[in-house]
Length: 59
Ligand SMILES: [Zn+2]
Image 1 (cartoon, rainbow, N blue to C red):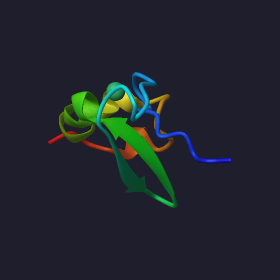
Image 2 (image 1 turned 90 degrees about the horizontal axis):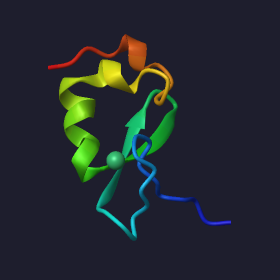
Image 3 (image 1 turned 45 degrees about the horizontal axis):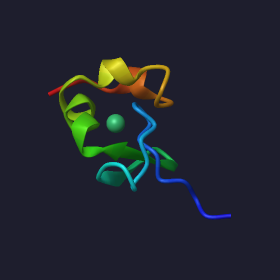
Image 4 (image 1 turned 90 degrees about the vertical axis):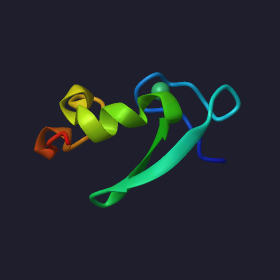
């Protein structure tokens, strides 16, 4: 079964919006262009969505 490319924040898939893959710890995740700034500047908002996000600090 093909892996679903779905933004971990808004659950939109790559058919609806540009979605990019990123790697964190031993896994990888997908996030859409709209939510990349959250990952960069405000990763605390990803706690509960991204495992280990409580270890991240925003820039
Ligand atoms: Zn999103």
